[in-house]
Structures are given as structure tokens and as C-alpha cells.
Amino acid sequence: MPVSIKDKMPQSSESMFEENIAIFVGLLRREGLPVGTTEMIDALNALARIDLANRGEFKAALRSTLVKSYRDQALFSSIFDHYFVPREEHQKRSEEAVAYHQQLKNQINRADSELQFKGESLQLTSGELQQYGSLSEQQRDRLQDFLHKTETGKNVESRFRPLLETVVRSHLRYCRTKKKSMQESSGDGAGQEAGADPGREARSLRETDIEAIRAADMPAVEQLLQKLSRKLAIKILRRRRSGPRSGTLDLRRSMRENMRFGGIIFNLKHKPKRRSKQQILLLCDVSASMKQYSVFVIHFLLGLQEVVRNLSCFSFSDNVENLTPGLKGRSDLQHILDRVIRQSKNWGGGTNLGRSLSEMTRKYPDLANAKTTVIVVSDTKTVSLDQAIKELEKFKDQVRRIIWLNPLPLEYWPDYRSVKEIGELVEMWPCSTIAQLEEVLTGRL
Image 1: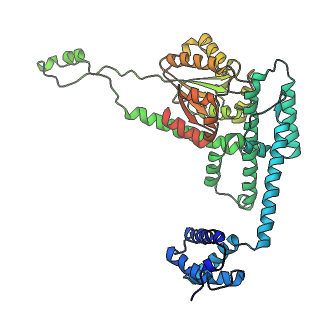
Image 2 (image 1 turned 120 degrees about the horizontal axis):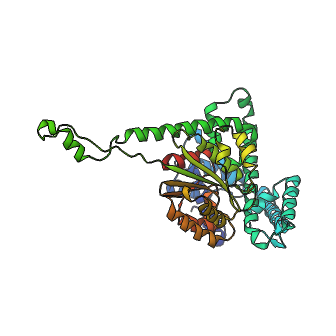
Image 3 (image 1 turned 90 degrees about the vertical axis):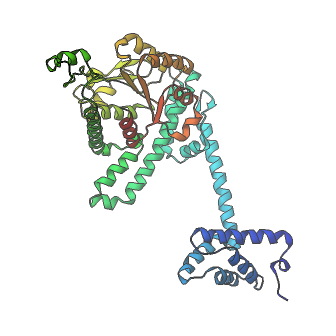
């Protein structure tokens, strides 16, 4: 009479054993091995006839019933060794896992105690606290020094904490992306030195978070932005030329023109078509977390001056500043960065969207009209959000449309009230990479 698995182990362990075999069979099937319920039953019957404590016999029984091709044996062995680890190895892995989780817990607690503003911990996720713990000691000291100087600055109140949290999040995201970029570049550095594929390098820059783009890549980025600007300019020109060249029918002129034909109309006359002069108003948030993104958007739109002549550019944080005169005739990205943006009084400050919009409509009423398309570059972080919403509602009624470019990653959008409420008023699009910037502006201008 054959011996079954039930006869060889306690009932409480039987179901767990069969469940582990089923999971193992599922892993094999996921990797492409042709195994199913029939093979699993054969394996359980074979295991009932061996010494389960003998690892060699155990592996041989599973291999003989689950593997049907010689070429699948190596894959089977790899999955078996990974899933059915010896007791000593299992104990070692368990201890390592416990130690790792304890280390993460200590790391998070330490980060929570170090990242504080006026005695209160910053509202950061566990992942962001872990990212802080992975920084070098010098990077952590620099960030703590920034928090201390901000905390002890003049007129710095507790209400500034959300803005400070945004800056810290942005810095941690930058460090993570920069580390990943350095690892990728060091991994195929030999290929780059021997002459990397320019197309692949351009694609990499298009997909890289703008804030993490290195200074060494700026020449390549400038060429890429110029190329994309020309591409968008050509699309806009083609769209204009493909449209109807004449306006509505002019009946009076048509009758007068065809009187010589006895009133029979042979030649139709049309009213001259009035071309809409689109006006673009660019509002760039140049607060601490936004300055790099704003520079790239400015440079991208400057390439469209041939087809969008009425382009006005303003920076804002606590108030607005007209950058249009300083950008005329400028095409060098570094020049824009050094000579225009950094000389702005708003550079690197906090954000008060409501005050800035109110000042914009008061000082420059001719720019906010029914022909104006407004492009706002901002992560929506602002003091006095309720006041900002009221001013944005009034501003929206004065212009043609508002396109909001938000560099905050999409996965963070649900965490912010400002994103939700502003997104209900305007068209909001993610814009943390050059590829997203191109996609949004190509389809919306």
C-alpha cells in the first residue's frame, strides 16, 4: 500500500507543504515551464515515496516530475535553489531581514528627529526619510544647516513649513535621480568614451528629471531644446497655412464684380480673413523648488518667437517681475540662467500665488485679455492657498485659457490640496522632463 504525504507529516504541516509546492509550480509556470495541476499531483505522489529530509532526493523527485525538457533543467535548478533554501541559509536570511528592517527603522527615526522645523517634524513619507538616511554625512549636514538657517531667519513663521517641506522633498528627489544617473553613466562609461549613440543620449536627456540634469549635459540640452522648438514652430506654421486663406463670403462685392455678366455670379469675393494674433503670457515660478524647471520652459518657448511674436515672460514668487526685456535676442541657456533669472528679485524665494496674480492684473491689464494663452510653470505650492484660488478664478475669466505645467511627479499629486483645487480650475499637465514639456506644448499651442 503506497504511503501518502498525509502519513508522513502532521495535519497542520500538510496544507502548508502542499501550498509551498503549488507556489513553486506557479513560479516554474511563470518562467515558461509547461507545468500544471497534473504535474503537481505527480510531484506530490513522488514526494510521498522519498525521505523528505534528504535534499538531494527531494530535488530529484521534483525535477523528474516537473521538468520535461533538458534545456529547462538549469532554470529549474536556479528556481529550486532560490525557493527551497537550506535551514541554515533560511535562518541566516531571516536574521538579515530582521537586522535590515531594524536598521531602516533606526534610519527613519533618526531622520525624523533631524529634519525638524521649529520643534516639529517635517511631514515626509517613510520613503523620503529613508532617502535622507542614504545621503552622505556631508549632504545631511548641509541639509540640516539649511533648515537651521531657515528656521532662525527673520520673519519666518510656522506657516512656511509646507513650503520648506516642498523644498526638502525636491532636494531628496534630486539626490535620488542624480545618484541613479551617475550609476547608469558609470555602468556604460566605456561605451560613451568610445563614442556613444547620440540618439540614445538625446532620449536619455529627454526622459531625465530636469532638476537632475548635470551641468556637463547643458550644451547637449541646449541643442535638444532648440531642435524641439524648431520642430514645434514648423508644426504651428503648417497648421496656419493649411487652414482656409479667405474669410466669409462678401455678397455686396460679389454682386458688384459680376454686374458685367448680367447679374450671373461667376466670381465670388470674400472678406479678408482676420488672423488671430495669439498672445502667450508665460508665468514662471522661480521659488527654490522651481527655478530649474522654469529656466528650461523659458528657453523652450524662446525658440518659438518666429511664430509666436507676442510672447511675454514674467517670474513670480512673492510678487511678479517682467523678464521680457531681458530675454529679447537671448538664445544661450547659460546666459539666461546667469544674466536674467538669477538677477531677478524673486529668485529662490517663497511663493505667494495670490499676491502675484493680483499684482499681474493690476500692473499689466493689457496682457490679460481674451486672446491670451497663459502658461504657468509651478508646483502649486503657495502660502494663503484660499486667497490664491480666488485670484486665479478672477484671472481665468479675463484670459483665453490657462495651461498649468506642474513638475511634481504624478504619484505625489493626490497628497497636495493645492494640486487638487488648482487642477479643477485650469488645464494641469505633468512637466518634470523635456519629453513631457514637448508633449504638452506641441498639442496645446
